[in-house]
Structures are given as structure tokens and as C-alpha cells.
Length: 413
Image 1: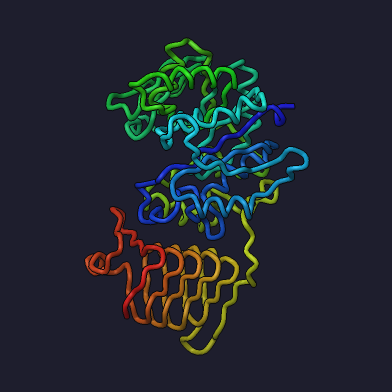
Image 2: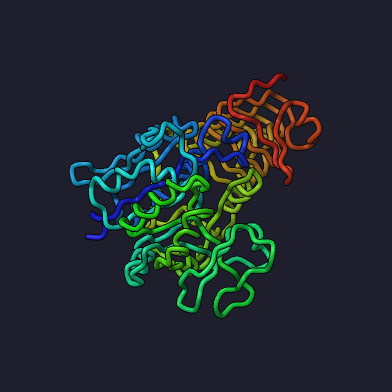
């Protein structure tokens, strides 16, 4: 019953400015991750693996690749009421694009009211994690909550980096502060931790419609859930509870996966999250048979490693290599390769992420870089060793020293 009366709405229209230039031509949820996935695949898998099959993905910014990915890789059985639908911004209310996260839902409020849903899940589409949504849903129902907010414990000294939630001993929301400068209240029973909002909500549908209409009529509102709607819920004395994500368990979960959640909102955090996948016991397990990670399946042949002639050896160590890749006499180490990457003879790539259709020329050397799709690296070129030279070529260099070669860049030999 809960699945038929629950609508999942995924917010996937954000620009992702901090992840530029990877978001120059695509929305953040459409950015590749882990070789063959897109970031949005993780939240979609969370709902499908949890038994929720009515999903609307709200898109806006440069959504073409995201729309294609959803339509080609996420078709469910419509004959029994299952769907993952892309919903583009339609300017249904006042002719404006979405003005905030709350406004995005408000402009699509008909999706809730037309089918008389009892419960609405509003989740972001740009985080990497696994969650059994049923456990949070049951918590929401047992608490008889109007709103349940997901939160994750973080060290209290890092509070200024997050939206911080304050709860009482029953985990009812009593306060919310966005990136507080002063030391916030700690989690009940743990003075070393505070609660950071994950931006994921389960709403009583009637309450959601009510507060969105109030917020929409407020000319001083930024129409954002965190900044405006949650404080409004407190002002209206609604029944708001907080769900401790660290207690969530999913089938096949390894000990290292408990509480794993990554924003991947910057080039450095994105690069690190991909590199973390290469560990012997990664915090995010891509190989669980009990919690499958679905995505669009490329019809490409198996990866191939060729040549074994003196120094001309095709090798890959401590790396993820997707289908259609050819390691042709070159070497990669600590790398994540999307489909159809070619590594040519005598080249060396390390600590890097190579996206679809990248080709590395002979004798080229790449270190700590992200090469976006459809880029050909000329023979003998070196990237990631001299950042001044990298910048001169027009590449982006992050604070952490990650060099990004943008999609489709044409490089001179």
C-alpha cells in the first residue's frame, strides 16, 4: 500500500557550479561516476531497491544528457503503474524557472494532487550513497510526522560547512541553522557530533501542499526548503522529526558502508570519491548482488589488454576499467575508466578519471587528472606534472591539484 500512495520526486535541476567544468555541458546529476554510472543512478537505485516505483525526476539546467540517460536506462513497467519520468521545467505557475528547491516542487504540485498521494519523498539527485528508504519511511509513519528529514552525524568542529539540525531527546526537530559560525548543540548522548541535513525529506502530502502554498505567497522567501520551508514548519509547530542515516541498513551492506554519503559537489571531492572506489574494502561497494546498482547498459565488447613485448605491455593495476576499453601497450594505475577509452603504447596514466571515448596517445603521461569525454590526448603530451603549463593550455586546476580537461577539448601536439 505505501508504494502505491507514495510519490518520489527527485530534484535534479541544479547547475552544480562548484563542479565546473564537468557541469559545463550537463547537469550535476548527469555527471559520470565510478566509470559506468551517473550520479543520479544512486538515488534512483535507492528507491527501486526499496520498492518505490513511482518516481518523477525534476530537471532544468542543461538536462539533455540526463533526460536521455533516464529514458534509455530507467524504463519500468508502466502497465502496472511503475515509472521513472523526467519532468522538465514547464513554468506552470508564473512563467519563471525554478527559484529554489521548494519552488520546484510547488511548480509541479499537480503531480501530487492529481493522483491524491498520501506521502511524498523529496530527495536530491546529486549525492552518492545507498539508503533503504523503507526504514526511513517506517520511521516517518511511526512518528506520525508531517515531515521527516534525513541527517548524518558529523564532527562538531565541521559544523560551519553544513546545514545543522538541532533535535530533542526524541529526535524531534527544534532548530535549524545554515552553516553556523558558533558551536551548535550536539547529538543527544554524543558531545562530539552534530547533525547535518542531507537535504532528503519525506512529507505528509497534505502538509507539503499547505506549506508550499504559504511559502509561495511570501515575497521575502527564497523558496528553498532549508532556508525557508523548514523554519516555516517550526513556526507553524508542525510535527517534524529527524532520521539518523547512520542507523540505516540495506541488504548486503558491508561494515565500511554504514553512514556513507558523499556530496561530490567540488572537483576535489568528486575526484576523491572516485579514487575511494579503488580501495580493497571501499566505503561504497559497487559489487553487491543484494543491492544491485542499475544504469544504462552500453552494448560494448569486453575490455581488452594487449601487447606483451618488452616495454610495450598493456597493464592496469588498482583500477576500474569499463566495457569497450582497450589498454593497448600502455599502463594505468589507480584510475577509473568509462567505456570506450583507449590507452596507446608506452603511455602512462595514474590517479586519474577518464570518461567515455577518451584516447591517450603514445608516450603521453597523465597524473591526477579528469579527462572529460571525447578528448584525444596527443602523443608525448604531459598533464598533471606542471600546473602552470596546464593552466596555460586552458585546463582547470583545482585547489587540490586535480587537472580537468573539458569535454571535447581539441589539443595541439
